[in-house]
Image (cartoon, rainbow over the protein chains, first blue to last red):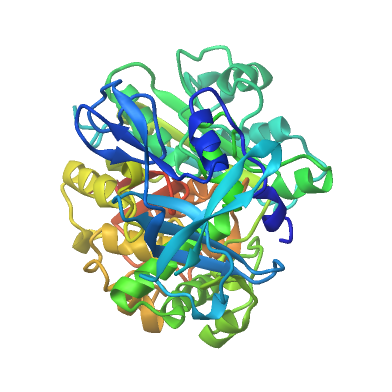
Length: 130
Length: 391
């Protein structure tokens, strides 16, 4: 279980998702946005999964949201916390909660993005309680 | 075109092994194929359709049809929806039979995750080319914690408790005590489930299914073939399949794809949840069962915790006897894929040959449901309704 804290340092980038991870490396959390239908989507895609327009781009978020659900694995050290966070922009993303007291976390808690450095200059968008 | 009454499950076989270090994957498939064909009273030369999923080696049907020496196959299908694949296969086999493409379909599943782990072979179904992989793997997503988040959210919205989830394992253990092949045969209590180590909060070790080697097989045949076999007739009454996913970030973890596959199967079968005498419900984790029972309409959404409590899933005790072989929680979860054994036990119930201590009296209509993939992200849900010759 301890490798839960190691595996999360690696990101598989490709030509489609690279701009998302490059932005993350610069401390910006992006979602997919479609200029045709005006909807956000996550994870970002080149073709809008809602209206199928190719007129999509990345849109920077506030980096703020609230915990939709989470699970603590205490066999890891420090405890590993996986979560779905619903961003203020309306979409929900898989992430980790870090720099927190695992015992006091609750669904609905407000959180802010906290980028954790990874391999190859990438940074991974995790969240911490406000 | 409805499949109702067009196809029959004529043969079943559950491999008795739970560890297969001395067998290859192809060998397991072949032993299972032979077992299912023997059970049907047919011969391998009769098989004219073959179905397998991602557990089969190589290119699936191509490698296995050759290994098995099948010469008369004119229909093949390698639909892969994870652990629910085999319920989908029954549906597709019935469709192919109804369309006249084949008469005798063989479906096999085998896996050896325990042996593979000992041999240092990597397990799991993650494909780094999957577009979602880069957005999930960096966070340490695994099977247990992805299901745990469903349980946590269900508890938050509906007040479901760990005690209620534990009742699902307790019921499975009551059934497993009679299954001599079950991986875990000891009866457990709610307190014992709660006292087992926390794996991914709020799921304890005893909320999780077993990991086993082995597998199972099915033979699905046309009515003309079925009537020529001296076997109990188990009719395919209806089937439904549905994917559910994260909907571009509009996430709801409190229900499964059974919300859509269930009504389709019930409609085709012409029955309702009230008509189901026995249900095989996919039980990768206790929460999988709880959400599925709600989604299939055995109780209202959110009432699953109360429904499963106090032995309501125990055969002879409760209203909905489930997983009378012990299910994935206690008996067998071969290759980390529980769908095949769900169909097999439902067929045993309709035949009336489940263990006498768990056999449901007059089991004329049974349901089997599979949840492949992950309840916490994307899944393939499949519902199958079976009946006896009068159904």
